[in-house]
Each structure stands twice: as C-alpha cells, then as structure tokens.
Length: 164
Image 1 (spheres, rainbow, N blue to C red):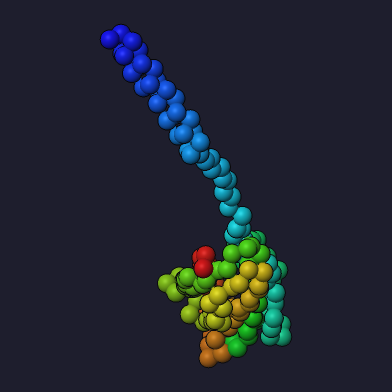
Image 2 (cartoon, rainbow, N blue to C red):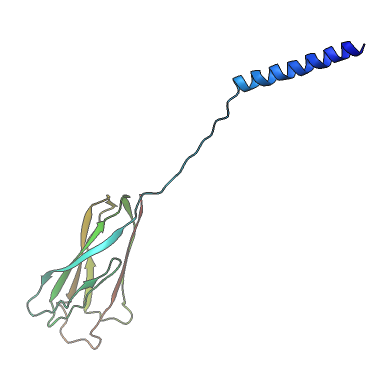
C-alpha cells in the first residue's frame, strides 16, 4: 500500500512539474514602458505698436509695449485731429490660437466726451507662426467748438486668445 501511495505521490509531483514546464513554455510576461512629454508651446504676444497716421501738429507720444500690453498717449491740438496706432500680435508658439474675447472700454464717466476711440477687427484665428494687426484710432471730435473742461480720456482693452 505504501508503495502505491508513493507511486501516486510521485506521479502527482511529476504531473505538477510537467504542468509547470508547460505553463512556462506557453506563458509570457510582457512589459510596457512609456514616457509622455508635452511639447506644445503657448506664446501669443504683442510684438509692436507703431504710429500709422497722425494729423499735423499732433503728438503721438512714444508708444511702448511688452509681451502682454501696449501703451500710448495721444496729444491733440485742435478738433478733428486724429492719431492711429497699429498693434501687431504674433503667435510665436506651436499651438494655433482662437480669438475668444475682445473688450475695449473707454472711461466715459470721467473722460472727455470730445475724445473718441475706434478699433479695427481682429483675426478670428491666429495660426502658429502667424502675425496679425489691428488699429486703435483716437480722434478729437471735430464738432467741438470750445476746449472741454475735461481734457483726457482713458481706454482699456483686452484681447484674449485661447488654444484652438
């Protein structure tokens, strides 16, 4: 009886070894290694502000700009004077940009009603590597007959581009 038990145990052990070898032969362990990197670059910025048109005797000042802002200070002599500034925006990044919002507001409450601002349209899409321009025209109302008591008016503008 002991010999029959030993044969059965030996047969079971042999079956386990054969099954293990068979499993190892038909089983594979696969490894997956990966790295992800964001290489897109967002870089929409102001690259220039130039005086495009000035009435005789007007002082367009010295317009300045940074990547995110442009500043000018127009000075007029007489009604009807006009100064136009051209602002250049560049998409120096690798991602196309879409115009999300444009908001220009003038300080009507505290500003002179004799000064008017007008802006041109902006491109709806700014492809990577492309530039676009728009203008801001400032005018001293030609219908004014007396020098107004309030002589200044401020404009604030926001041009917002987002990823397309």
